Image (cartoon, rainbow, N blue to C red; front, side, top):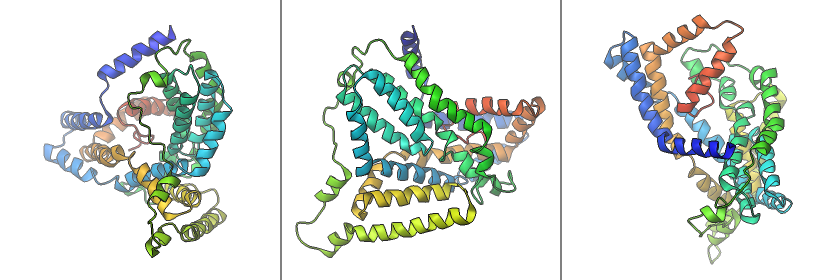
Length: 374
């Protein structure tokens, strides 16, 4: 019954759910129309607010891009690849695959949402090696395991709130930063982490499909030419057939490691002087330094960055639209009106729950952990 219900949901979403970019366009028009109807703003005010807002999330968008690609680079390192291969050799049954993916993915997501690539790579490797795996369900397991990231060290809104001069402070919404000890360290957040780690595998175990007929990876693959070239091998292929200074520098491990060690020095200094002060910038810097250490040479890290950058096109051109929507809401006063409605029905006891529902609804349209705060 659950399998049939899941298939029905899949068919419905495939039929009616547009891409995230289309959502951004529709929301832009809808927000502008609502602002025009329910506020006293003139059309030109709304239009100016949209344009001005377009540029207010540029630094935030770049931070999101960097935290994704630096984590992705870590996932592509030889050391991580060997770890994935080692895990894959120890797993024998489809049930073990599903539970391992959810458990490992939940833990990795607490480090960074970019770490989902490690879970995805492991899942695909297991699907290639083990018979009887329901591949669509495995994909769902990877995605499901990734949801805990918002409670972890790369939680965009928690890190943003603790970052100096973030756009909420510059917009006058906040007066100062909010420490991650109040967000990531809260009892509620720790309880949610516990749910993701201990309850998620149980839910997946209850939902395991009884049959994988016609749903294994080999049944669904349309492209049989996989490029499994490692970053290390690709770097070797670029080496010149003769001795050259440029080649020596491109593959100079001492050069990259020297700079990475400077980075390690600053990271130690940061936490020694500021305590457990996590913000976007320091998390990105940590991932950057780890990636440099793991890939060793400038050539390898450049290749890893190039591969990672192919995954962030949606963020690059969609975030300005989200910022434009925010601009409309601020310039027209629509945001203030919505806030007034919510605060009029909320109490100190119910506010957190109302915020939870509001965020859940907004995130259907704006895939961001901080969309409701923007």
